[in-house]
Length: 370
Image (spheres, rainbow, N blue to C red):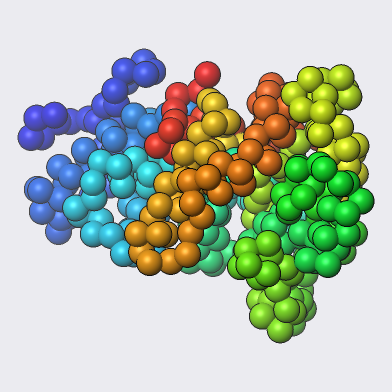
């Protein structure tokens, strides 16, 4: 790009056209003006902008918003926004901000359905993504951006609804020899009635002064086997609540014909039967969906291994390579069985305009859709 172009242009993934440049305050230095123009080009080159409905014109018009979100995320992760690495720029401007802007539009459309004076329930946004794919960090970032934008939000994970340690032991005893139900994780290891009660209560937090505690799960309890955390440490959520970010590795999974799951792993048959109750417990509450799509389920092993190696390097207790393989092996059959249908059909009840599918690579960065 030369020093003083009269318009900005994007890389050629769509027809070129002249655009008004993003607004720059008169006091901006030439270097800052140039850096904003470069950032504009970088934003336009991202794989998600078309999917979230942002044209080059719309990006130019909203560039202040992109810059503001970028600054907020940099502060959140203690990064120098003027010296971001390429990987950090990709994560912020090609991933987190586009997803947040899509979510914000979903919230606006949801709230516009109601008349003034109505009790408006919070929008539940489901985030379905395999373990290790970065969903927890994504949800953490979205929650932060909603809050600094003035929207009251909360986060919830399917992990928060795991059975208690005692109940998990009973589940294991009822299914002797089934490795998929020996530990927490697969369908059958969640307290679905507790899920319904929690989600119903959260969606009723529509007024000032309303408050409730949301559950949390302690994965470190009982030597890593886990247990529901004591209610005394559950965080409070106050109304009026506008957004619930609900994440999980198996959100949106649908039961399949028995012969299909048995061909993947005979132990899945009982898991598949358990899955029949999950739509009413979880998915029916979700109005907008984000689905993180991976190319190969075996990525989960590598991602988990990286996390454990990092923990061990920091002097924290972490699983050995063999323990990681054993842990992940209990989830892989479900991934192999259910992900193809999720990716092909979307979650039950999802609408195309309320579904954002994000393909990611092994580095957890967004790709152009397949």
